[in-house]
Length: 454
Ligand code: URP
Ligand code: ZN
Ligand code: ZN
Image 1 (tube, rainbow, N blue to C red):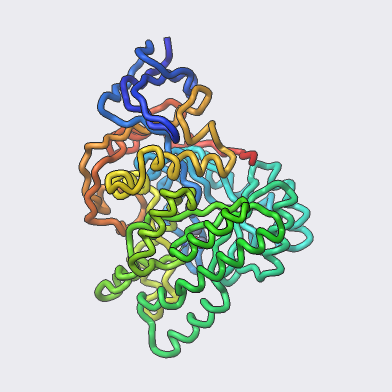
Image 2 (cartoon, rainbow, N blue to C red):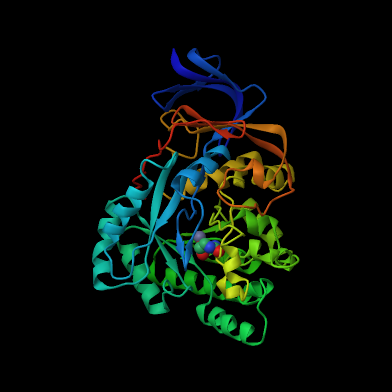
């Protein structure tokens, strides 16, 4: 007799689809099969039963210039849970000169007791001092074997030789480097030149970060990863050319992974032309792209040359935050909300539109992020022994997205007005129902830090 049985749903794993019951005890999946007995049951007849989704790229409470991203660990993880995400990985950003392990402890202290789902942390490398080099193995041992690097952004940018040092050190420690790849020189030049020419509106944000900036930087990053032998994960690939560069590196035999995001799959740069200052709602980096790039990204996911869909959730209120850039686009904080909508968007516009199979949907949203970041099979699939992080997904539900239906702490959604076919019905985290029919119903702060091996 199991403590809980999820009865009669259609299980979708990364590889299989079949009707079965799932038995759960002490927060762990302990059995699957026909007609299991349980002290409690959840009826999943007519529903898809999938692993809780894993979001490998979010920014909660992230300081950005004079402000910070508007979702905190409580609001952001609640929104994630309602949207079917039961694990996320955020970042640690140590101050320059500060110890990495100290910053890791502080970030964990910020999340613990507030996060409602399990979380991991990537360590951001802003510099490569002797102290940084010395700390990398200890950071890996502390459960953070993935290191974020930026090839642009003042205060974060690593030049080539510093990036190479990061690749060497992380590779030697058995870790994985994540890279935000845009050509810093080109972006900085255009961020100076365009406003000086009087081009100040949100549209010029995209023109200051052209396709070539990403294409060049991904090509360079993969080449330097090749030279150093370090595994590389390219975050938020937004262009056909970027996706092709990732595919070429993989074809050379490198361990290189590519992530894209719903905004690059579904939206285009045309959003930046909205009347008045509304385009600011769509300012993110890399920027939204010309039509055509999205289809190439879908094709990359379908061909497995891109492996994951992360959200890069980095929300800012339009009023009072995005408005910081009313005078000139360089003042608009970069980032879009999306922590709650990824799974359902990928179902409608991936599975429903015939671009992805159900198994591929589970691969890119659940299993592949878990695998790449050392969480599989505890997270990202449905097997005995895995955490009972499970989503009962109603493939027939019809939902029109509005800001008011979502739980993200922000005053808009970039996906307003889209009608979705299929939506999360129930979310279980370690065997407890934490979200039901669009509401968070779990306890406060039950999420745990996940120390990850790679
Ligand atoms: O515009 C974005 N993506 N902001 C978040 C930080 C980053 O570059 O991922
Ligand atoms: Zn980035
Ligand atoms: Zn990001």
